[in-house]
Image (cartoon, one colour):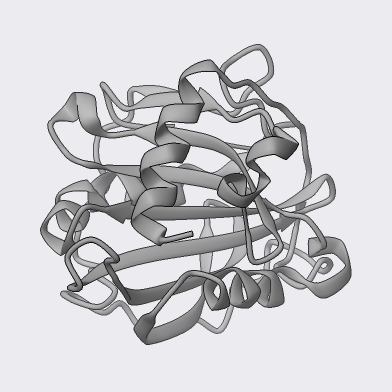
Length: 220
């Protein structure tokens, strides 16, 4: 199914869907200490990593027990971003699954005036194949992409692997910037993505992604 159509239908599905989980920190390869610094590259301002973009102000915490999108991780999002659970439905598996990962939560930016989403996916075989491999398989099923780069980083206190890339829009035929981040916990390997209508929308929403990345922690 075309990527653009997947985005539209998945967004519509989240209006009436629900899901949940809980977790504990581990490294992106499924083990090891989270206190050791990863071999991350120096900060890179501007594209493709935009490390000079400051995180937005926190307003809503996503992931804790008893809230929308209960998950093994929690993180903050800015005001007006709207989280919605995604409850898996086998009839719509084609829309909810991609490259061995299953969508569990969607955070809509439309109330802020931007067209795009933060999405959280569970890497279904993360404990077996490792977080990095889970991210690679997810992106391999993500349509036509180019300028793909990976790096080791930290998401809150957790070791993480991050990817930046351009994806071709099925609607416009143009390439747009997107971002993905994967972390492993004892209760699940979680993948966070940011995508917008185009690169301009992506850049406008990037402070929300930076906030989520900076504030990621385990649920318990």
